[in-house]
Length: 193
Ligand SMILES: [Zn+2]
Image 1 (spheres, helix red, strand yellow):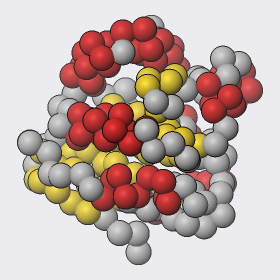
Image 2: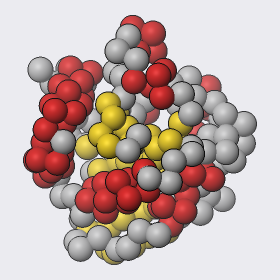
Image 3: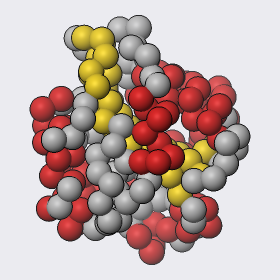
């Protein structure tokens, strides 16, 4: 049974997930566990989905293995806002501008202190979400204490988000250049332009 923490109540509902594969949870679970209840609506946190051997969320096999627990949690929660928190060691691979050709997903964009923003797996997006959902993925370096301040601020913001528009305004205000790139990637990827 995957542990879930439910904070607050009512709409909008948000689901934050960490520890999506391998030992990633070591870098992400503590951050998710320390979140407070949102000002309005619900926040459901899964600090550690699994600690089993790494399978990429871009691989179909992910969703027939421990990813089934993730799909079950999404179907039960039906979040308007869905966030994955990953940790990485391969900065160059994630931010490679050719990632869209190599992996079928846009490159991550660095916001600050090694914190990257990008898209969730298109497999999960197709299975569980529509264009009305706001889905975002953050990646933090697996060894860089500096990133904690930035990611904590971002998590705190998304936790209180009520819509994608709210987040877009924040992103463009805080990170005008990177925000524009991230938003353009997102729209292109989901066929919104
Ligand atoms: Zn990951």
